[in-house]
Image (tube, rainbow, N blue to C red; front, side, top):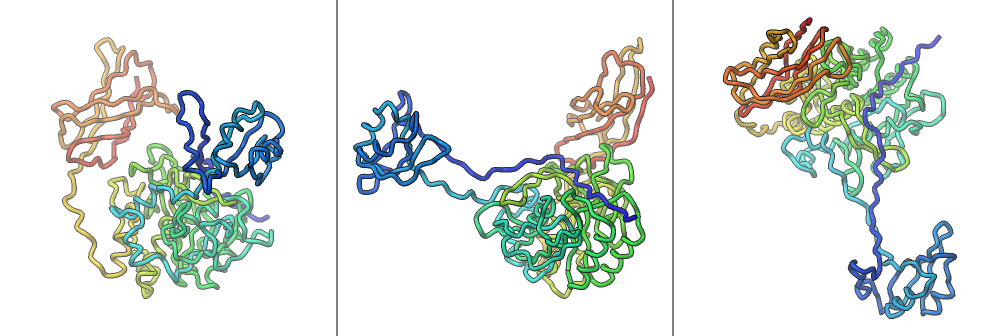
Length: 501
């Protein structure tokens, strides 16, 4: 029997953004601003939408000198051009509900995308790095659910592909692959929608997952083989399984040995403390770059898998990108983080086509930004498009300036009041920082929700002391969620702890 590998979506947020806007103007209502019809008129006639209480009366409009353009069957209205001086008389007719300007609506400009903005460092859209590289000439294979090549932000971007699921087309019948593809290479010069990391890279739709977001192992392996045969430069696999299978590892190793750079999602199996090895495969293989997910505060997303195989971290929470049918949606998951790295790899290769996949991987590691997270959470750090392209093209990165100091949670201790009714949780900082803000969550008996949560400042000994009033018996553990101290950055590490009352 074939083994079926389920794609780890981990979509924490999913909603479609409808890219339209408009306004409805009320005409001559007391307290409102009347429409200045002279501004709407051409040769004394204004284009209008006329609403009726019953069926639209075309004869009435014509009697007022109007010319009817269209009648709408699903609403009681029609469009027309009518002399400005006739509008007041038309509005007095008891069957006319409103007369509105037939305004023009325009496509919206590109949306602000926090993840893209973050990986380009201090640059602003349109990113100066694109003056050096936009990914031109680099072939990126998206091994996923397919790609909707008719989407306005991906139109003309699909250079080829293959379907391994048996439906006979590599079009996207799920949505995941189109979202991933938009992050890699959506067009930025069409003044609408979203933009990708490497907007000039060529995309290849390798459909290895079906409409449910799952695919058999042999589909994945065949997709990797196709990528090798078609001389693909970068493979993105925003998919994963907890099963360590030799055939998949062999396929990834063969592709890497052939010069292909492989990027994959680390997985969405992490727990809140991030204290387990949960990296999924193929991300867990040595030949693959496993990408964890960060949020807009540079913290690890709570769902992001952790472990020694995490190599890089990238934005993966509330990422806006393209979906089939011309729309856009916010998705969350390491599936969204991986294409940020694949896109940066394309920029690096386009900046210096002589680089091998080993050299590109090394550049991504060396130019990553240390977020001061645990190595098992961030690997080398946050992928940086600007610094990676500078390194590849031989330019000198800008001086980042002095590093702030680092503050650490050195100890979490517990004590009881004299009557043992109340419990105190003390968080010690190192070095001693007076007035630092410390936030914690205290869990009772391994509950899924915190028993208490709070924020206080440290005293002159660098200790933040919390009180749990009327603490019941049980086993307590504390998670430090934030430390803010002037002139310092928290390393986001805190000791494991527990207390039995």
